Length: 245
Image 1 (cartoon, rainbow, N blue to C red):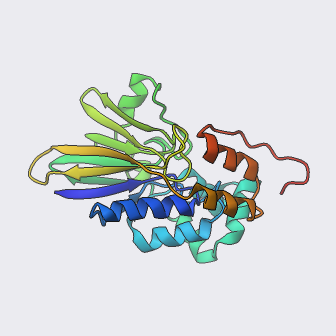
Image 2 (image 1 turned 180 degrees about the vertical axis):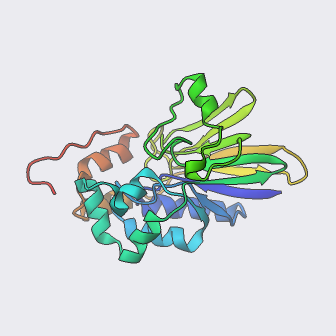
């Protein structure tokens, strides 16, 4: 039985990332796959990226990873960019778009946001045609198989749907959950002798006070919005305020 811990949307939240690592290790899981958005939003981008490079066996690019690496130049991109080394920024910039692997004879696809682009969102309420299209090949991003199952992130909400017999699974968010205040990760278990699998969501408490303190002393932009999201699990729009950089 192959067991994977699927993490995503860590968003530079070190306390939550370490809590998930410790929980997975307690369960005997040693293989971590990270589906993007390692950095951005939170106060400790270098530390969380260090963890990812040390422990994750597979990592794909998220939209925030691309932005921080240079795709855009908002205040919330520039601050974490200033905390990373040139080698780390190159690492983020060159992460692969997705993963396609066969488990038990079925093709599983792992992407951050969707199969159509880093900045194209696949919502729970997306049309059936959009959901079906998500399983189709998209060679420009190296997605060459017709997927039997799709695992993605980006929405910060755990989700498991059946799309005409194909699993559509969102792994939830470790560092910035927006369907709860508790970090969430996904455990996938595959039977190597057949197409069967199990999907288990894990939510856990963590040292949120430590993370809030780190944010409040970091000098990062939009601290108020970030802390509010940690406390409420509700998305906060970010608008530049006078005097904030």
